[in-house]
Length: 351
Ligand SMILES: Cc1c2[nH]c(c1CCC(=O)O)Cc1[nH]c(c(CCC(=O)O)c1C)Cc1[nH]c(c(CCC(=O)O)c1C)Cc1[nH]c(c(C)c1CCC(=O)O)C2
Image (cartoon, rainbow, N blue to C red; front, side, top):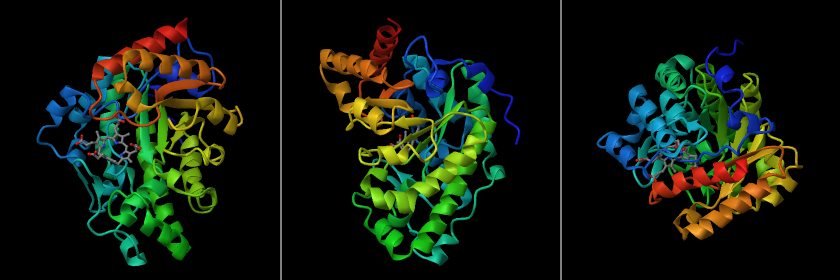
C-alpha cells in the first residue's frame, strides 16, 4: 500500500499531529467538533437552498465550508466537511438528512434481505471525496486536515432505528436477538467506513477521527461483545496508512478504558468526564482530546476562561493534549466566543 505524497510531510510537524503522537508542541493545538456549520453566518449563506447530502458531494462547496472556520478562528486543524452517512448513501442506501432532525432512513435495515440494500463501498464511487480533500490539502498547506467516519455502532443505530433515537431499542433488540445479522451489518458498515477513511487519507488527510457518538448508550459488556471488534477492525485497517487516529463518543465515561483498546492513538473525551479521570482510565498512555462543555460557550467570559485554563492544566498530565469541546458546537453559539477560545488556548498554553 502506498502512502500519498500529499500533506503528511508538510503537516508532520504541526502541533496537532505532534500532540496526537505524544510529542511536545509549542502550544496546545485546538479545533472544534462541528466547527463548520450553522454557528457561522457564512456557512448558512453558502448552504442556502442546497440539501445537506448534496452539499457534501460538491468539491468546491466542501472546500469552502471546510475552510470557513479555519480562516475565521485560526484553529490548528480543519475537519473535512461531510457527514457520517455520506459513505452509506454513496454505497447505495436510500437515506437523507432532515434539517433539525438528522439522518433518516425510510426503509430501515432489520433483516438479511434489508442488508442487501447496503452494498459495499468502493473508492471509485466517491471520486468527489478525493477531489475535495485534494483541493483542501493544497489550500491548507501546513495546517492538517482531519478526515472522519462514523463507527459501525453509531451508523447501525441510524440504519436500524430509521432515524435518531434516544434509547436505541430496535438496535439493541437486533444485536441480542440476531447476533449473526448484527455482526454482518456491522462488518458491512466497517468496510464502508474504512473505505471512506482510506480515500480521505490517500488524498492527503493528516489524521482521522472515528466517531462512535452514541456508544455511551451501551453497557460495557455489550460494547465489548457487539461493538468494539467492529470499531477495532476499522482502526487497525487505517492504521496501516500511518496517520494518527482519534476515537470519540458521547457519555463514554464507563467505556473509556475499553474504548482505548480499540486501536486509536488519541482518545476523545466527552465533557461529562473530568480530564484527569479520563487520563487515569486510559492508563496515562494515550493523547487525549477535549473537553470543554459546549454550553460553557454561552456563559459569561470569565467562566469560559476559567474552564479553558483548567482543561489546559489538566491536559498536561497526558502524553499529548488536543483542546476541543466535549461534543459539537451548538448552532446558537456566538462564533466570536470560539475565536476568543482559540486565542486563549494558544496564548495560555505557550506561556
Ligand atoms: C452523529 C453524527 C452525525 N453526523 C456526524 C456525527 C458524529 C458527530 C457528533 O457526534 O455530532 C458527523 C459530522 N457531521 C458534520 C460534520 C462536519 C464537520 C464538522 O465537525 O465541522 C461531522 C464531523 C456536518 C453536519 N451534519 C449535519 C449538519 C447540519 C445540517 C445543516 O447545516 O443543515 C452538519 C453541519 C446533519 C446531521 N448529521 C447527523 C446529525 C445528528 C445531524 C444534525 C441534524 C440537525 O441538527 O439538523 C449525524
